[in-house]
Image (cartoon, rainbow, N blue to C red; front, top):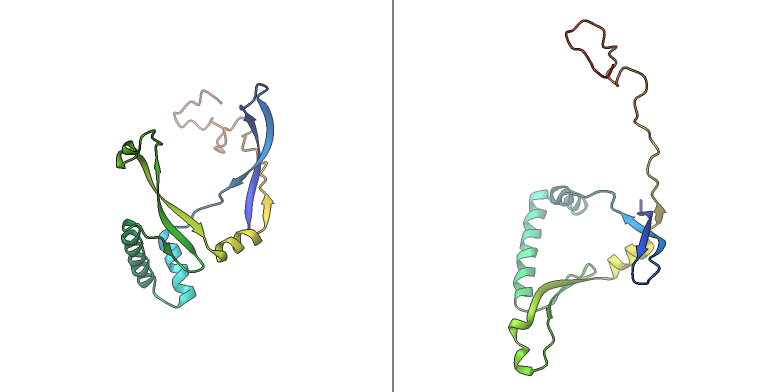
Length: 157
């Protein structure tokens, strides 16, 4: 199936001319639920969905515990998670302390399996369907002429 993109006009405001350019932007074509993902993994591995959910819950708990200890966690060909911080720079060494840290985050670096999958996937332009849903005629799309003495007078008819 591959990745899909649309072409979007974007104004670049970093110069005086406010240059307009056309940029490909990715289109996310859907989202799979956790339950459906566990079902798919179960079908591939020959395990029940509940077993897969239990294993993933255990993986998340172990991941959280190790990241909390400041360790990076490598999940084979999937990739590596590592804790990171963002901090304000200080002129004095004594000001470079825990109070200077303004964000904690987790960085994910994909492994070779994910990198190869992305590098080898197809990319196609997504064209929105050119469908006109405008109703023509005087029936307002309800297959009703409005003249059947039902007590309702349609002001648009």
